[in-house]
Image (tube, rainbow, N blue to C red; front, side, top):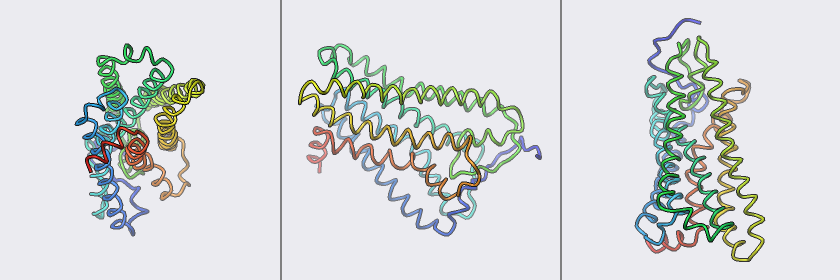
Amino acid sequence: MKNLSGVLVFTLSGFSEITETQYMLFSITLLCYIVILWFNMTIIVTIILNRRLHEPMYIFLCNLCINALYGTTGFYPKFMYDLLFEFQVISYAGCLTQAFVIYSSVLCDFSTLAIMAYDRYVAICRPLEYHTKMTNYTVMKCILFSWLAPFFCISTAIVLTTRLTLCGSIIEKLYCEIWAVVKLSCSSTTVNNVYGHILILVYFCHAIFIFCSYIRLVGACQKSAESRKRFMQTCIPHMLVLLNFTVATLFDVLYSRYGSTNFPQSLRNFLALEFLIIPPIVNPIIYGLKLTKIREQVLRFH
């Protein structure tokens, strides 16, 4: 391939299948983004303004909603901008920045959901130890971990990507991702590949840890009606969110590496967008409907 190591702009070829419906998709996307902003901001403001909700579970939920705003900011504005124009391009720096924001947000979601699972495990299985384990200092450390670890992991992946010599400038997606850029390299990508697999394994272990925590909670919740009620209110929503998010993210990551080009572009686009659309909308709805204190305060504000 022709050496294009001085690539300054990428073309997002995923838009080729949606040129006839761009304006309709813009309207739908704008509506989705407004809903995401409204729902997540409602939960965040409700938790911040109400002192009764300054408990670990609600603070972690607030963190999840803040991360949803952070992650969607990396996708929606650029996506809507591209829908309005004939050519969809993004600068090299802009591409890596978008990939950093989207995928650090994804990892932050996994970290936060793992922390929330641990919080529910201690609250239900070891209630007498809860206030000694989940102190304000512990909560602060958990939140810092949920942000700093993903930032470090994705920053390392970005640095490894910037050292590559590129021999192409077409990204077959609607947005930038790190592996899509790596695939354009005409130099060795072994280090990037190994690091990527380690990262996938580490955060897949997060998901396994969460599921194992909830499996233990099932047994613990059989002891009393109150425990069963708490499990249904707080843990079932977590499991549904995690299952959807894990499947969607795994598809996006694994298809980018091993997927067939014979797969219809329109279906690829839909599945690749699922983890950017569904969780940011569903998370605040589920928690707002299932958690009594949140629901009461939201209804009071309205």
